[in-house]
Length: 166
Image 1: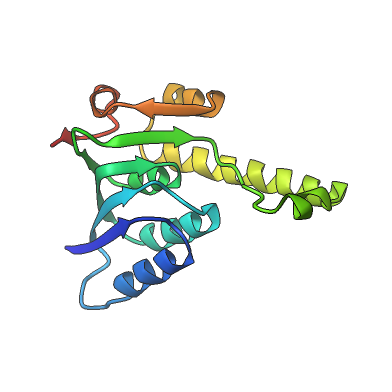
Image 2 (image 1 turned 90 degrees about the vertical axis):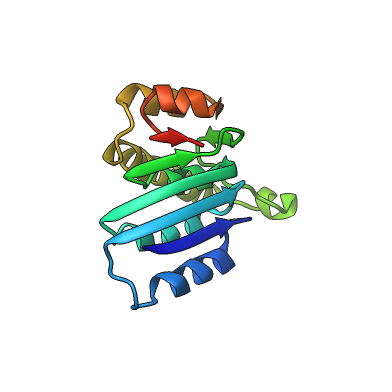
């Protein structure tokens, strides 16, 4: 079984690291274990990692201390999901941060429309990932109706989102 570790911020460097590991042809495209200890990161990078992982038929995900924000979307790709008993599991709707207020103040209406469209597109992609990987419609609706959802490993187990707490 091929193992990929996603530790730290999800960004372009993480995409390169995961891509390099997954392009190692000494393992078949059947079994993949992903170990996650991340507070999340960039949505574009997260979607790139998801695209790499979705080639695998048998994915197992393991959440350690932190599985937050965009790291949750990667965690949910697992057919089998395991979580550490003290894991900080935090989900929220996708959002995009504008680091420079000067740049933000110069955004035109068409640019804001494009950004709004991108957020809607990303939300639809996340919803489909959630439903495709066995999350209940009520759980998905709760996720998209609340600003931030902190979920205990026990609650994830009760909702049949994780297979085992360790």
